[in-house]
Length: 131
Image (cartoon, rainbow, N blue to C red; front, side):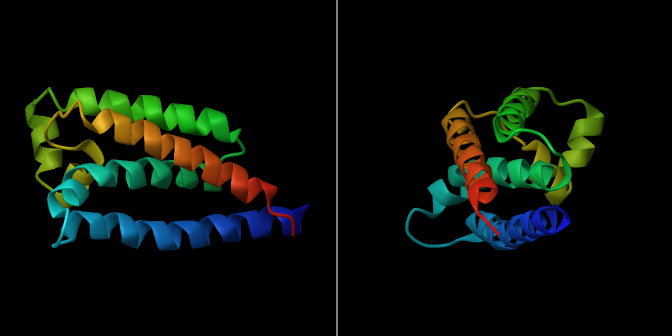
């Protein structure tokens, strides 16, 4: 059982090690479809990242993780309509802008649903791999 949990964690860490640079790359990509990649597709990677990170530390069913991440991210999107000084200060940093976002965009919601769906499938796939 310990070996199984260990190998599961290794698979998640490897997944995150691949996913994180790809997700950040979408923010800095210059080329065809750059505006779409920079502004919208990152939402997919954002959802997958949070699904995998929670999955790494918590023994929770993948569907619960994916739904929790989706609901939280949707709430964060609506939070972008609110601009109190503390949130503006947090958003003044790259990591704050990355986590909290800066501008509400209703077109981000489909990407959150897609990302959470992929995150759920990714977690299920990691669970189904036999040692």
